[in-house]
Length: 251
Image (cartoon, rainbow, N blue to C red):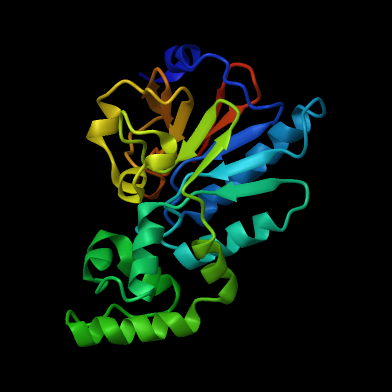
């Protein structure tokens, strides 16, 4: 379900008195991210006061890969995190997990390269490696020297999920029937059909990304904000303030 029918279906999730914005998968689209942050700032200015604490922005994972400017997008996230007028929180996506696995020698990097990692290497000035173990090992060594400490700290500090009132922010979704605190990392980063095809039983509104469509979509208990920004040129956010949720999008 999409559009106004979806927003009506989601009800009025409690945010604990906070004004919260969630942003879908970014994948290196620095242009769209900058425009959407400007749009959110304008929305905040248009609705001043009455909320507990600063406005919060939650990022739903997949900041890197596929799009043209992964390293530069991490720069934008780091800079936004320094804005004292906003509380920024961010969850781990499967693409960040793949990059960390490569850096930490938990993967060869070859599968990461096939699913968008080559664009991330390029954004750091690392050439596409020769398709061999030696080539990927050399790329790993070079990447380790050029990833700034603030990027490394950002990636390693990403949260697995974030709970705010009746809202649960997670990258891909939840394994049905499993309590939140017992969810496996693999599921919250990669799950698709098992989550999307089953009723949500978590007692919260799950706000997620990972499985893109051309516009935000969902069902009772869940909304997906991944609108395939790297390919469609559309980046989507949702505003939660204790009333009916509202969508913001930019091109």
